[in-house]
Amino acid sequence: MLRLCSENIHSFFASESPDEHEPPMPRSLTSANMTGRAPGHTTGKERILTSAMLLFARTPYSDTSLRDIATAAGVDVAYVHRAFGSKAEIFRQALLTLGPLDDIAAGEPDGATMISRICDLAFLRNPNRVEDVRPLHLLIQSSLCGEARAIIAQFIDSSLALPLSRAFGHADAGKAHFALSLLSGFVTHRAVLGPADLLAIPEAVQQRMLQTALMNAMLDRSDPGIQGQIN
Amino acid sequence: MLRLCSENIHSFFASESPDEHEPPMPRSLTSANMTGRAPGHTTGKERILTSAMLLFARTPYSDTSLRDIATAAGVDVAYVHRAFGSKAEIFRQALLTLGPLDDIAAGEPDGATMISRICDLAFLRNPNRVEDVRPLHLLIQSSLCGEARAIIAQFIDSSLALPLSRAFGHADAGKAHFALSLLSGFVTHRAVLGPADLLAIPEAVQQRMLQTALMNAMLDRSDPGIQGQIN
Image 1 (cartoon, one colour):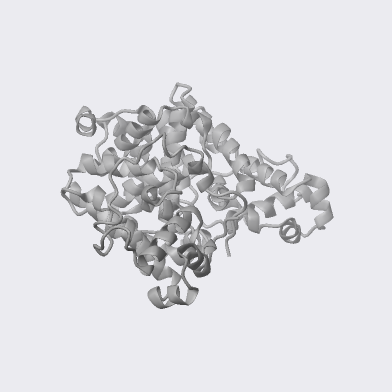
Image 2: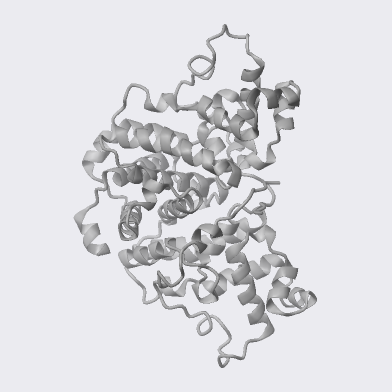
């Protein structure tokens, strides 16, 4: 069993004021993804999913129990079990409710727009408010957690890699996975180690660097001079 | 406290046969970094460091106890304590013994050579043999571990980011950290999630993609057409 020590990744994100950086895109948590009820009339299942999102955004899968979720949702743990069957299923549905990243793929964007939207995800907001929780919060918290890994791998594949390769007009999911791996490295390195020299770069410049890196990766385009130097 | 679940990253690397891929560079573990004794005459301290390297390469910092290290080295735990003072100090010295990545910075390489050597690290070998253990094994296992994080951050800064920016003839450590974050993302994404589409790409092609991404990041060079699309 792997075990991590003190602190968690959240402490990094939480240090940012949620008001300083507005979420880059409108969220449609209650409209597109919920059952279409009038606002204010949430079902128990919806409350459970909302609570699960907030918890999974701040603590890893393995540290979040069905009891925690039930308590946060104000329902009985037996009801959570009856409604979803398992923690894995709640996690999967929480990811899908936050996704299928409809904001990112909205309007069949071209590659550059898609990259720009995906890179916005890298600059995560404070995940204490349900409207600020992004799938990447859940992915980062739990990506090293064996039980959640298969769900995460499938989510990344179908909700990020495939739409990304489609936006570039080809079906090269391997290249999309490569680009997404660079993105996750940037997010994690910045959050976990927070190197002063990197953080000293203005956020807008960091964002441009990241977009360029992902565009280059997707287009597999490099200066012939660079190739000459490498080979 | 963060806690991870089953399996660990090692299981991915261990699935590769160590004989299939030879280590890309000669290691000089016993010559440059040890005390210069005749081969076969290792001191207790050297045995402890060697054992610690092997353990830290396969299990996270928080899961590796002084007792584990002592047992593996065949010495008393009190001696380990006397010789090093703390687990943090053993970890730091194990990293430095594997580094200061003298192979990577050997001969004052130019940027492209340095990138090529660093990218070799991304294709890790089986860390069951001490001669195959690379600093990246230790970094990946323990990068999420709070106690080890400060040591890792300092190691990456002084042994990777600074030499890398120097090889490019500038002192822009922020850009080097950015490039290294992409590298770590590739390694971790590939190891943790192992997406089939990414793994289907021949390793030599993956390596070229990674080198290109890091070169582009360091040179901050992008096709003006790409910038036009992003902005």
